[in-house]
Length: 120
Figure 1 (cartoon, helix red, strand yellow):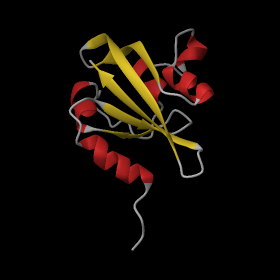
Figure 2 (figure 1 turned 45 degrees about the horizontal axis):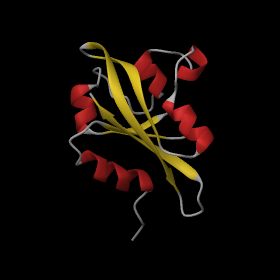
Figure 3 (figure 1 turned 90 degrees about the vertical axis):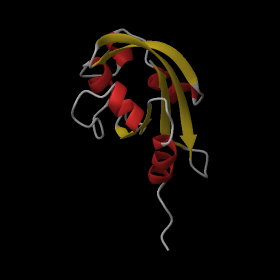
């Protein structure tokens, strides 16, 4: 029996959460968005495969390169969990979203994914 991928396992867990959660790879690409995210913050098309800054901010490059704070860039450079209050574009207009972003490490200690929890 082939073991499940870390993305499949985390996705299964995150799908059960009531709060919006997104799973990113280190290149800012969304690899999973739970039902709470899709219902409250989704903008029609699936965000999977797109970069977070394109979806949430409508930018062509990461937020920190657009003059804003970028929780994912901070987590990438520090390797630590970060929190932030971030302005997102939602189906209901612009809204501040409290973000808690946590790096996920593989067995060798390398960061392979990031989990973002949002409070709207």
